[in-house]
Image (cartoon, rainbow, N blue to C red):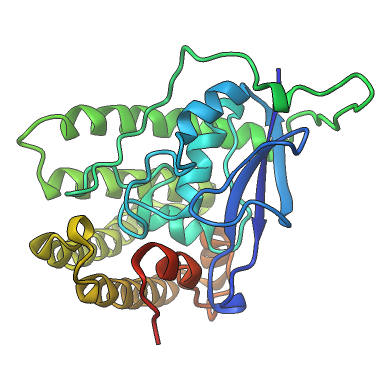
Length: 296
């Protein structure tokens, strides 16, 4: 069995932006870019998993079905999909918890015109030739840590929600409220997992209310893109630029609300950030290369 490694590095905005993440196999001879670069990063974690399956999930563009950047997800969600055969995520990358809260661990699957189906290729097995270690090149395959085992338990709870979401997304009647409800449930799982005994019934209710308000804000922002169909024509990027700016504001406002609601300990436990830290998820390099826009 091959090895999949979660990698990360800071983006241009440094302290204000989330890390970029990507995946490589244990030999280092094959990597998947996940909407960005795929070299010179630092390792987050590794685990055994089929590299052939990971490559199928990644698809030829190495974006793993995260169809539209900052709409279905960012590099974190693409990397998580590719890492599925190894049962790990990019947990620990700076800004990942905010990204996971707003996009889910595997992306927002039902957003028009970017459906982003999560194809898991469960029947794929084996390893790519470039990912098979030679006898003279022993790999440092580590046993799963307690955190990795907990991560897998969490993934097992998340996957049924995605399976149900996929069923709904295939129906013509799939509506924004369906995606909203799914994303609120995904966040609730995340919050329960991270906060553990800190989570009480009253706090859960308050967190869900903030999450629902934020989901509605994201829906409204994405609806403005859908009206112009700019993602298809790419003739007018003004609505994409406006959306990216608006999404960054939504992201910051979300962190403000959560910081006001949670104690310092709860906030840091849930988001792996200090209560006064604020990050954005839009990578300026990806916005420039994919949409030809620069945010100021």
